[in-house]
Image (cartoon, rainbow, N blue to C red; front, top):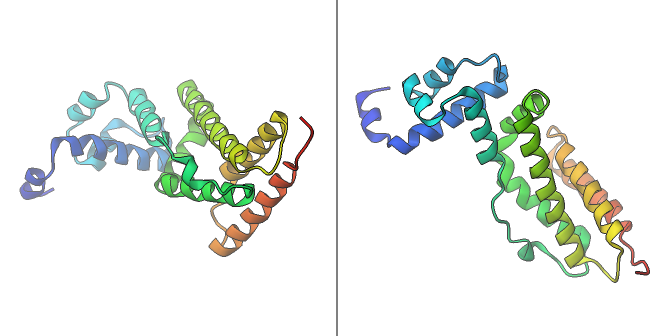
Length: 195
């Protein structure tokens, strides 16, 4: 880093650079195999500054997952197409993809570390709960006719499983076509039922 670069960088940027470096290195090498010295070096900060922001490596992991997995508020009303739950699910999924596009690396960390770090597993459970609730709200608002609560819940769980386990290697068109077909299949189970 040149002296000019260090002058231009703002102190609050250091925290983000540390999180970015940790995300990359934890995904590449795993949490346990990544020393904080490597994180500091990749972030171009002194090791003491890393510990200023994150007193322990575990705190760094917890903060990384807590902040970067958080979706923040999502306006689902703008995604709902009345009487068209298939389109509504696809709209929601597209919006979630936009929000999480940069976190493919984070997904690697979460799936790798969830069983060895309870706080990661807890954050993942919380995240999945938020997603399921959001999916269920979209389905309820876009459903045609009365549908039982159990069917909404089951459809939301099925869609959650689909969107959180999708492989990222398919061609975009093939993936969109498959996703649309899966949305139709899930929504077929929401046909009006006596309440």
